[in-house]
Length: 265
Ligand code: ADP
Ligand code: MG
Image (cartoon, rainbow, N blue to C red; front, side, top):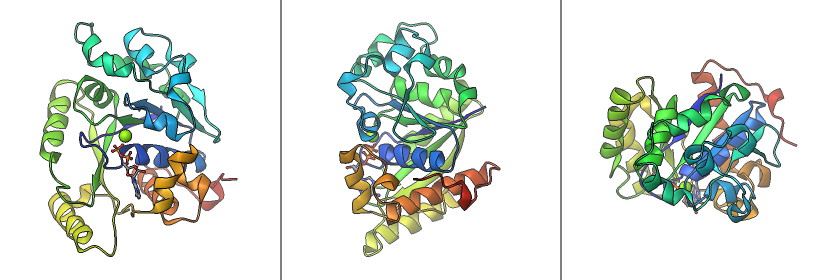
């Protein structure tokens, strides 16, 4: 049964999409069957993997609103073991359309239920909001990764997110756990970055991943080529850090990966 991990933070620009794409690509490169669900109307994971959201006939929208069969919507990417359920701008309307639907918080969970066994990991890239689509994602998820940018106001809004997670745990998904808090865009040279690392680690202790994602130009360039950073430059600090994150998660979940499993060509 695949583990469903949502990448969530209602703040924009903290590295959710970057983490979804590069963590998923790293798990896939380690030969774990991996699916990304793009649950953001901005469809950055879809375009970041080389697809034009406008060209997508079906998307997560149709699965959630029209209950179109999920398996038929999955597309294969150019990378072995990495599949995608794309997003579409129509997903913006889903927030409103779902309000009067039956099981409105469980639509994503229902969509994922019958494809879970096809994958080892399903990574959901959430939108920068705590609206109904993100609530659906957290209800469908086994765990959540919270990216936190090593910047001013890093902790701003985190209380609200943690509060939402607690409410979901008590009402909609008692099994939801926090997989970890991920520090992103760390700049060794900046005192501020180091202060944020210290502050977040002191506050959240073992909830914080050991792996810290550095600010790295290759990471920011990769989406414009429609590829994960490891496909652009496997040796770059960005690619290596996401591979380390994948290994940390695998170990935490009782999987073991070896270098011989590096199926990158
Ligand atoms: P979110 O999905 O939370 O809105 P993104 O993943 O889209 O955030 O990241 C916001 C911007 O920061 C993007 O332009 C992305 O390329 C860039 N970015 C994210 N992580 C890094 C990093 N580690 N180093 C450099 N740029 C990054
Ligand atoms: Mg995003």
